[in-house]
Length: 80
Image (tube, rainbow, N blue to C red; front, side, top):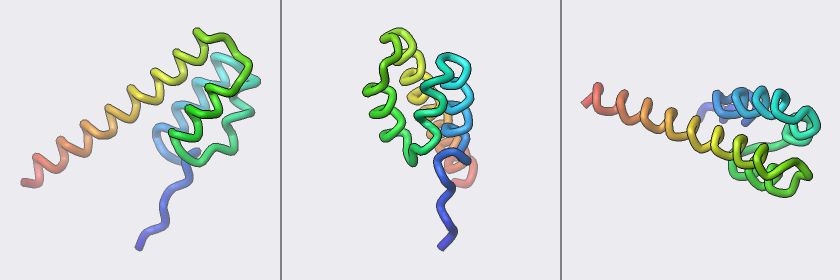
């Protein structure tokens, strides 16, 4: 069985950590240790950043996850 990528090495993780650092540098450092999108969302919720920044980051996570799911679905349809 292949080793699972660490969250920070996934497309969602890279995008989130990069965006978090740009939106709020403090939050970028808080998210360095997260291991999943669910954990990232929880950490964003607990952070002391503005609600607008929290919403922007959470929306980025959801959007990126949806893009990845759509790409997988497209590959499966092409394989079928």
